[in-house]
Image (cartoon, rainbow, N blue to C red; front, top):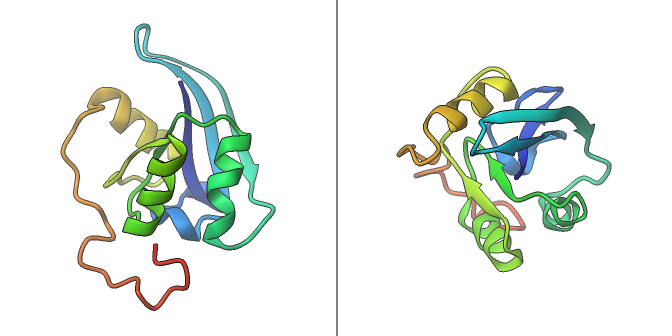
Amino acid sequence: MRIAIPTQDQAFGSHFGKSNGLFLCEYDPRTRKVEQQRHIARQANGCESLPGWLLELAVDIVLAGGMGAGAQSNLDRIGIQYSIGHTGNTPEDVLDQFINDPNGERENLCHGHDHDHHHCKH
């Protein structure tokens, strides 16, 4: 399973659409082993560039703090899973949170925040 976690200057970027990079890794849920951890800087700006980039990177799941309904719809449409409501200072914190409780109930950090002012409605 290839996991992507949004980053802001290599720290955890809690808001998916505003990230300037990704932390990528390979995770095997059976063995709980994490491999090939790396940071990748985002080349294109704008949230509309994210779905295609995630497809190119063969991402299976995105772990984020907040993600608007538009971004969720885009990921649903292209078959990429997401888990939202994560917190932490580093992407490794978020990864550990997911590994220890993959189905945990978390509150979307975008919940209640009006994103209609943003052109892609995320």
